[in-house]
Length: 177
Image (cartoon, rainbow, N blue to C red; front, side, top):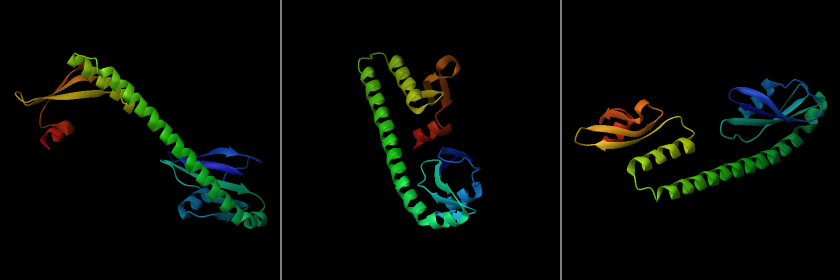
């Protein structure tokens, strides 16, 4: 038996027991595409629920006749496996969400006592980088007199400041609308 994942355009054997035979990639892909259990050449393959960017297939290798006999069992077992995988994936997603919210609360609590605007904006930009796993962050302020958007701080940019016309780029579109 094998649990195979298809992610980023590649198949990989995640978990298996028994003999390590070559995986029937075409059968695994067909089972995913047709969204049903397929039996071919001694292999039975059943698709599992798709998670974000990841698709999984449960497969069993046996003799051709035995694989055909096992088809209804493979279907039932894969449905149970899919339900369990979905529950674990959802729980992991919820845990990451809670951790992220806790981080946001901690960050915002540290902002309260900050009295300097530049320091506060820098802390906000740094928090954005951490939370969004980004390389750069800017907080744009609108200078209406000069019709300029001032990105300060502009972390990851030389001199730590960006100046762009108020009608340029995505930030300009936000200002206009």
